[in-house]
Image (cartoon, rainbow, N blue to C red; front, side, top):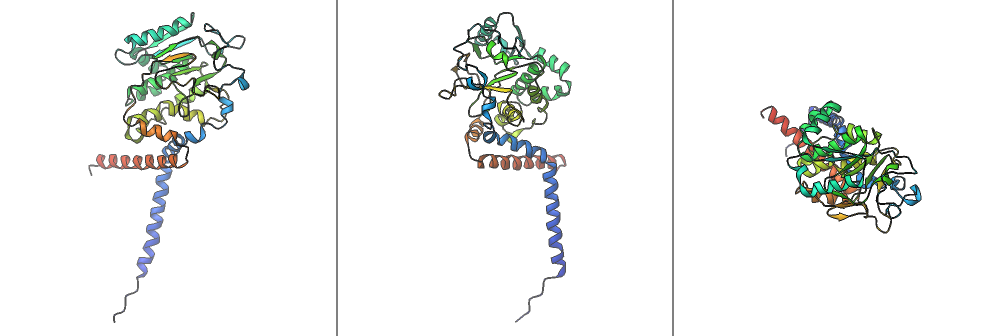
Length: 334
């Protein structure tokens, strides 16, 4: 019967070396990717953190002495009097893209808001005026803005830039005004609650050079990634509602970043999801940019389990590394 040879000392020495090298490489990869991992976790964690201290930022009769049904305010009230008007009297409509400003329903909807706010300035932002504005006031973002993958990203990013520079009210072209927005001018920032969490960027009000809106602008470069390689998450996570709501959720003090929601017995009162009528708007519902991958992200947002964000972070991380490695191999001709 033969005797088995003893493992050589060289084999024992190389195993710890390989393990140590693998550990060091893994740590280096994590360190180099810390920014994308942090941002991915922040986006995925929105369903878990959005409602923290919501009593501070949700407009209510108890906290703010404000009637969210608007029943006690005149339809023609264009000022917050007796409160201070913090939001300047400016209406901004964004009509980027061919034929956007000529759509008959949108023209009528925009005109309804202008008529409801006599004496206010009204800006209609087109491709030409928007390009000149970004080039002049945000030159460091101009190239990124011009080269966004999807047109809606340019519109979303422009919302924040215009609102920061001028202040006033940002309105989607498909919002028909049923009443004046004066009562809300007492707040530094206002946006309507969205479903299932966060807020809608189709309607926003803010004071000029508002600090929070400034952060929405300054973080655009950081979140400018092709998320999961799909249109819907790329838009929502780089410029859209999910992006803006994530920045909101991680502010230290959210008390001045007001979100307009309904009373407890009708919390959907001000949500602008699809064709709906709220106390202040008729929403014609033109979310035509939503793509085939929207259902996946929406279902993620509805999840209240910690596992969904964790799985999302893992999926995005794997996708990020695979795409990055593939691009590197292609550049090397491998």
